[in-house]
Image 1 (cartoon, rainbow, N blue to C red):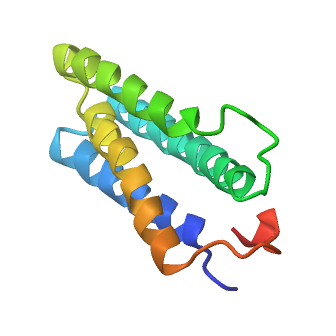
Image 2: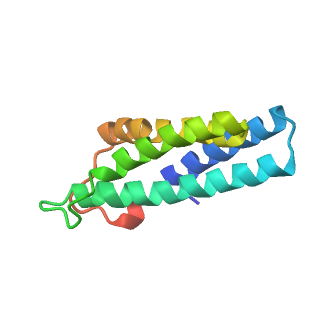
Length: 123
């Protein structure tokens, strides 16, 4: 089986969040938070790839595709404040991962640009 980029990304996320849970005491609440963040990042991976693919079209089908990253950064800034107040450490680690994701994807796409004939299954 070939390891896809999204497998690698999600593996890194799961490892970082598990490490945070273990280092902060490992309560069941933190494990639930880590699982929620992991699934949220998986959702963001799909949304990001769809936005990338749409943006690469000669005329994007979704006019607001550029807002996907803007909304992601805005919501994470607000979650950052909320999770600091609540001392939700796994969720705080998730904020860092979410904010790093668009940067990672830009670097990845510089090295591996989308080809015009790429299918969504290959992303």
